[in-house]
Length: 103
Image 1 (cartoon, rainbow, N blue to C red):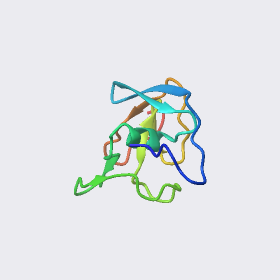
Image 2 (image 1 turned 30 degrees about the horizontal axis):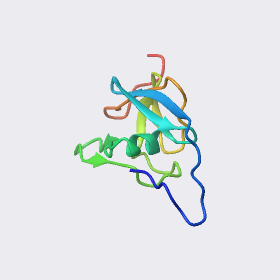
Image 3 (image 1 turned 90 degrees about the horizontal axis):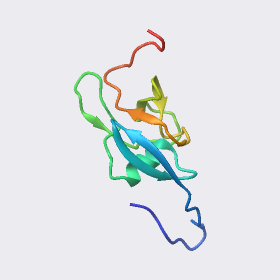
Image 4 (image 1 turned 135 degrees about the vertical axis):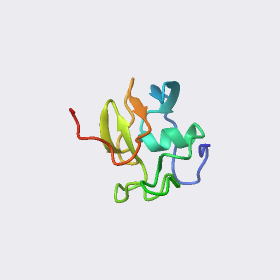
């Protein structure tokens, strides 16, 4: 789902960016964050609560909460709501708190 028309904002970006999410090839628009590209592709669940495994989605969109933490290009705890989408990124769900990078 994307807004295509708006009375004030213009959406004339058509450059598509390829990335993968849990092994599935997806596309986003240039200027998207990872979370906004996932949302536009119909992926609403970005993480789970650590203890009760309740679904978490696109919540604050300013990097203050941990609802969108994912593993991006092998690095855990990336806040996908503020991380720009880049060509060829590999995005994966993060289970639990994530591990220390490099271990």
